[in-house]
Length: 269
Image (cartoon, rainbow, N blue to C red):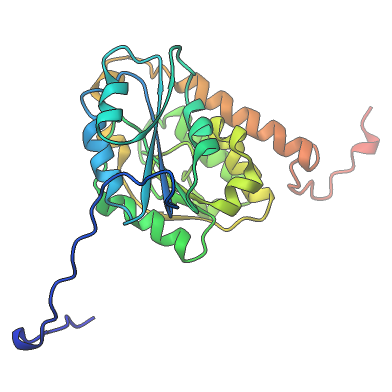
């Protein structure tokens, strides 16, 4: 596409910048950015700053759970809507809580420990504005390796079971991703705490779900997780995928609507 050339003499006056101040309770945000946070004082401020830039009418919701390092105070000073719990809610529960309080037509989910630039968050907003119900990160993890991570395998397996091989390893487990208000109502906020289950429900409900932009969160993952020889979340996330497959089988049949070809089981036993 040819670059537009604007003569200096015809260049319009710059439009005034919209302030990225927090929205008051009387205003209606277009986008709700949900950020679960637990002891993320080092990165939270930067995450909130980038989140505010995704749309002129944005509310930022920080769900603080079990934080003891001042995370909650930082969120409040930054003008975010803060939902606080003294105890830890467990992995991804903050997504459900934040979604229940969100007022926007578009919900964007990210994490407090990974600073993602606004330019990499906006494509998810744009996709939902164009009609996508669930806009996924295209990042699929490493597959061209001698030993593929079990979580990566689980993501690919679930998408195959859902007859969506085009998604490969794209998943609602991975941030960032965005939902339309319609998708939230169809999936229900409570199911967002088990992202593979939420994704399964979305596809079975016939929602428009696509991978829209790649953010290499594998490379951006915090060092403290890499300090473990075994990923502490590996078994939990694989278990989430098994829960999603169980729901799929209950919603369809014992083979998840996959073909049995010409096999006649009536002759067995």
